[in-house]
Amino acid sequence: MNDNEVHAECLRVLQDGLPESAPAGFDDGMEFLPLGLDVDGDIAVVTFLRYQSPIPRNVPPFIEGWTYHRRDGEWMELGGGGGSAPDEPLARRSAADLGAHLQRYGAGRTVRNANRLLPWGAKWVSQVRLRVAAEVTHLRVGKRVLPVPDHGHTAVVWGARRAPAIEALDADGAVLETLSLDQALARA
Figure 1 (cartoon, rainbow, N blue to C red):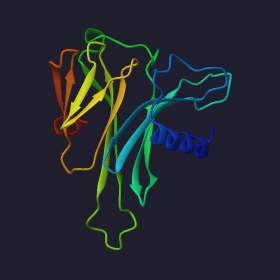
Figure 2: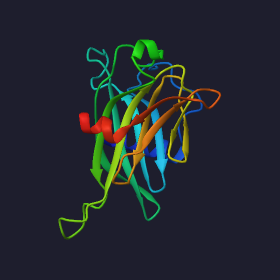
Figure 3: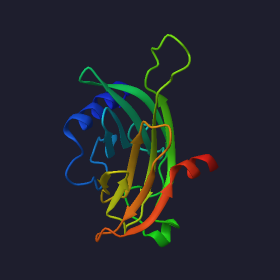
């Protein structure tokens, strides 16, 4: 799958949303599985599991996250990146296995207004990729509540200067853990 095909798949996810059921694995010939989508106003992040090599798959898959900005009614790709997926990336883990309810494994930042004439005044779009424990059913990010897919991979996007806190919620709405992204990203 080339970059143009990945971009087209991301646009499809932005338009149609994620599939109703989380993927259980790659079907024959598939190289792209959407994992997460977060939209906050006119910015978004799409995350996916992707094979970098053709079949036979002798290279482990990657998890990538790409940010987008909606301009004049169209989603414009800003950029992104990723890294190697963990072993059995679609298997949900408990908090005991992960060592926490929220495990940050990727983050990125892209400029939203790269076409400005002067170097100051940059507006950024930030994203974080998380692996979420099986005990967590939803994440609360400010006023937004995001469902956690069966595989436990989520992404959060924001455009504010300060990173939001993310709360891991159980099925009853109780807070299991709070991740302060400003502190977590400062340690990275």
